[in-house]
Image (cartoon, rainbow, N blue to C red):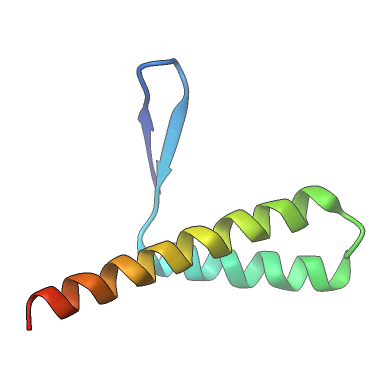
Length: 66
């Protein structure tokens, strides 16, 4: 994972697809064991959304190169 500083002083985490999948599976397991922990549920939703967006972009690139 790499972190990139933004102009407004924040940071953005850049992860490989494998890192995202590992994080998603770990969060899924944690949420299953602790469904009342709202921060973990929110994080899982964000990771799932990012992973779905990555998959959509990858499919778009694959279709464009055909």
